[in-house]
Length: 275
Image 1 (tube, one colour):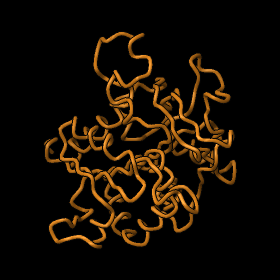
Image 2 (cartoon, helix red, strand yellow):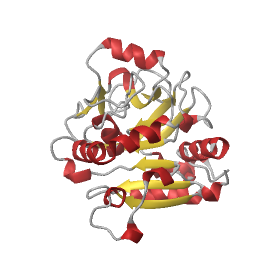
Image 3 (cartoon, helix red, strand yellow):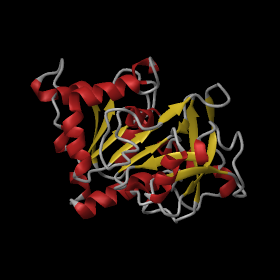
Image 4 (cartoon, one colour):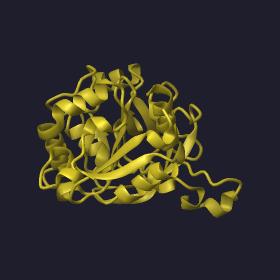
């Protein structure tokens, strides 16, 4: 498939606030990206020209923000609307191998809607994990270092070196990834579902603030067993270009590639090669 024919939907509802930079990341790579309101997919309060069909898109991204004011729990309302209005379409979308990316609030939405972790390779009616309030009990906004895990099968990280350390900024109050048993952690590891973990400059155990939320096993991002759905707390779209990195002037200007660019480049190449 030609890159300019790849259609990307950056989903938004009231309260999302990272759709613009997410949209621009995909546009910079030459795709046919569009900011799509959930109501356009549901056919609610829109004209016929404004309606969109989920199946017409090749990539879906759920961006960060505070969807629906994060009432009840972060991402819960957005997740419930997705399940009730697009549940079957989403299951089919994921089952066909099409990629879905959820960043920060988008990760919370994917967990709340049962799209992740999907241990049994299916979207569940009840969440199998949670993103709880940070251990610091406050909003954490800081650069974070992430390790690209060695055994991850995620299609969003194919252009990174295994074990590589990257810098993505975090900005969340509820980013602590938890599950209710060590068995589920073991399954994440065995399935290659742990994609990113928090780390330190020297690779040691990341105590606070290097792990900004207290996630179990320092987990920053996971994928589904097939690898085509990624949920990630830190923001790759905020370091798409080198100059977006907080210390880019210290590292020189040898190229314009930011640490987050390969998230988007990897998935675009995946669609180019497979559709």
